[in-house]
Length: 62
Image 1 (cartoon, rainbow, N blue to C red):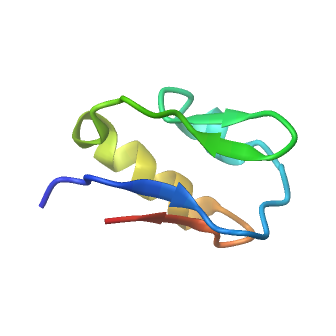
Image 2: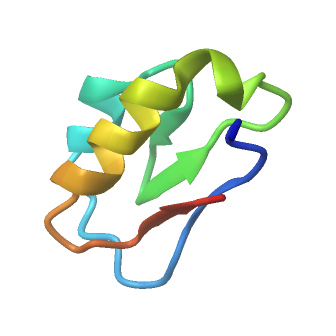
């Protein structure tokens, strides 16, 4: 099933790991944000890796 939605819950520690793994989807400013308007299904493996690697466990997708 393709990923349709990606979001970051409260608690981001701004470690930058998500942006390092998948800069096409994640951008780090004061804390990490999700870049809108991207076809998430093209980056499913990277999104899943970023979510699994997140030390704060705040990256979610569906």
